[in-house]
Image 1 (cartoon, rainbow, N blue to C red):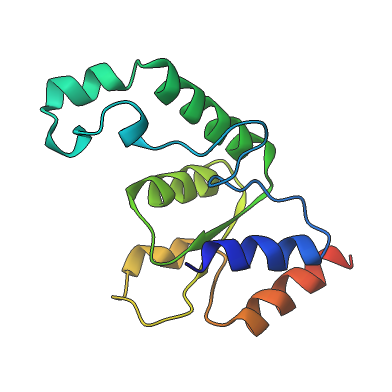
Image 2: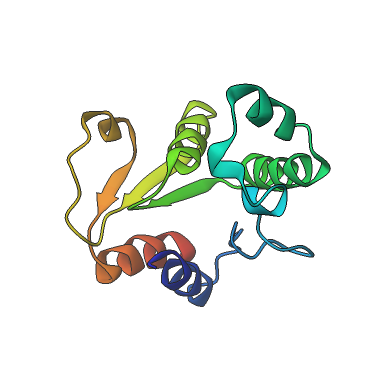
Length: 133
């Protein structure tokens, strides 16, 4: 719900933004595109689905964007993929900010990131400063 607003705000400040929900020249990835019964997969079915052409294309698109980007904004609440991506990006030496516009369960390890932003004003201020450098 917050993600599309964040994408729009960052773009309005002149940033190039990869939007995983609307990636360039394709639609966003969903397991249901591979199998409508995906929520009932066994581990073996899940492992096989990782090799499906749609899963490979979705992974490649997202991972290429992670390598291209210099900054990550992890919008809460989010899923396991977003947490994995943010951790990879921080480990790759990139800036990572957590955007938490509503109360969430505290997470100690978010301390490794470059900041926790709690409002659209704070987000705009952080990225207005960056874009004006």
